[in-house]
View 1 (tube, rainbow, N blue to C red):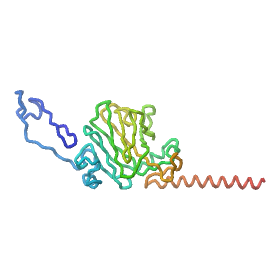
View 2: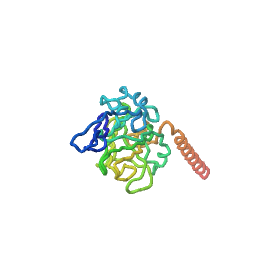
View 3: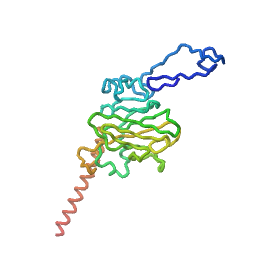
View 4: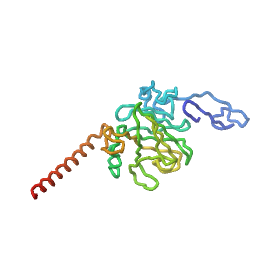
Length: 260
């Protein structure tokens, strides 16, 4: 059996497994059987959580409950607001979870690359299976209405750097993130940049997070970095650096006045 969304394809070979008469006679004898629905599908999100998503549990608005589809999932981010993840119907979502990811953002090099951005969703971890080996996969992330992400960051190795690192997943015509209002469209190629296992194996893995423009930021991207609701300790670190700078400036001014 091959299961794609709400469609099941049954594959038989005359005389082989599944042929009830076990004979090479040009006939397939189909024995009684039926599908089994597992709570949480293959990606580990409970049906009760998905059913509480917007639009009565139909986050992507296709008229089918997300909890019944293996290529669609809805789950809360670190704030408790829902996001919906949709893959191609031929692909399957697996191993899905969202974590704060503050420790990953702290590894930004340089830290100024996060200036003017607001990270409040948390990092989304997932795998996309049933991808053609070396083939493409596309993921649509639907965020709450009114939110407009402007960048997408990933954590992991890249073809030019095998060490896990934080990098902006810009669209280069083949892989990367594109934005449409409250949606992020992620373009992957199995084994290439963005696929964190860097292996052509029919599986794409993706730890990453969208970024909003920080409310205190200008259009030029200046301003500080605002992390998610669990990241207040990082803001405190920035305050200490600011205080240190003010103290140093005061000392310089005091010495200048004394020498004058």
